[in-house]
Image 1 (cartoon, protein in one colour):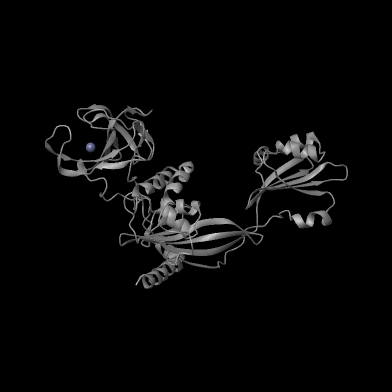
Image 2 (cartoon, rainbow, N blue to C red):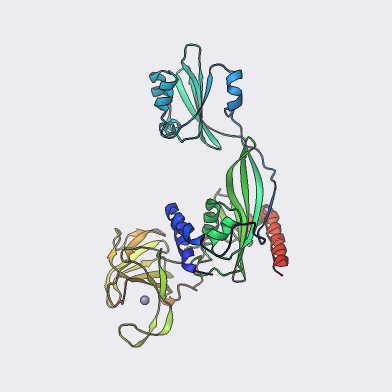
Amino acid sequence: MKNPKHIGHLRSALVTGLLATLAAGASYALIGSDNNLAPPDVSQATYPLLLPKHSSASLPKPDTEQTEAPHRTTHWVKPGETLQQIFAHLTLSPDDLRDVLNSGAAAHALKMLTPGRILMLQTQADDRLEKLVYQQTPVQSIIVQRGHKGFTVELSEHNVDRELTRVSSTIHNSLLHDGRRAGLSNKLIMQLADIFGWDVDFAQDLREGDRFTVIYELLYVNGEATGTGDILAAEFINQGKTYQALRYTNEQGHTDYYTAAGQGLQKAFLRTPVEYAHISSYFSLARKHPILNTIRAHKGVDYAAAVGTPVRSTGSGRIAFMGQQSGYGNVVVVEHNTKYSTLYGHLSRFGSLKKGSPVRQGEIIGYVGQTGLATGPHLHYEFHVDGEHKDPLTVALPQTEPLKSRQMAAFRQHTLSYITELARFRRVSVAQND
Ligand SMILES: [Zn+2]
């Protein structure tokens, strides 16, 4: 790895869902020794996936509008254009406009049109609007139709074809860089990092030669590629350790990613409580204290970060302590259950929560500071199991509920082809690396 910190930006963006920061991470990560020409270590395959088609709605077909129906107009929305302007341009009634916009909640999206999307308007001989179809997303349209009691609105899904695609590649630089090199979109790279973010710290753990394989859907609307669907299965080999993720919807209708053994990938705890930080001091049972100059245990991890950087609770629970503790300055302790608690020290100030408040995973509980005995702004983070200090970076994080044994047969049947496919790609890539 040239500069692992760059991945930290990616991870932070991913973990917190801050899409905007991805661009910053991207500009870093793309500066590398690799070029973007056909990478020899990327393998890819696409093949049709036989899935039942979604119920289809008639999408406006631009090339047939003029001949087939003289009162139908197809309009491509221009940047900044409003439905009001389009109605005025086509000399349609402002009353119809008002009634269309008030036809129901689904019509609210018509108040903010997206440039480039198609709007189809069908009128009667007297220029009264009969029907409006707006392609809200590549796979969904808003249909407003005149009925006996005025306009009614409904949402309709398009004819979507799905194709399975697999991509496999080696990490040379960062997940973002090498994911893009393999042809993955930013969206898929973020999904991938979200899926494995519970096990792999993309800021600290990535190594040259790590590998990933992703099986995902390509979506086609009326034969045209419109984007990517979900990641159905993925594998990440990090420092020789293999992690697998299989997408599955359980009996309760909840979709999640599981290991082949049916264990949910999502952990009850986040690995890190701060974004944009680097580790300035590790967990150690004998460390020379930087200020006291004595040998003492450092029973936590220090994350150096700018004063004011948000500190997030790594797990859900309740604020058990909020106040001063000698040495650690402003401290928050979150009690997650009877077994687990976490401590956050040297905070500049606290978040809006109070002592005793429930706290959700990822919720801001304070801000990085330098209160207490600290040589610079950083977060002191501790992880306690049954009252004992554990290294937050290596402690086995408790997982969410695994699939029930009675669900395992259906799960195995559903995921078998993906597991086979992932294994096949692994053999191919090993052969290539030899
Ligand atoms: Zn510390």
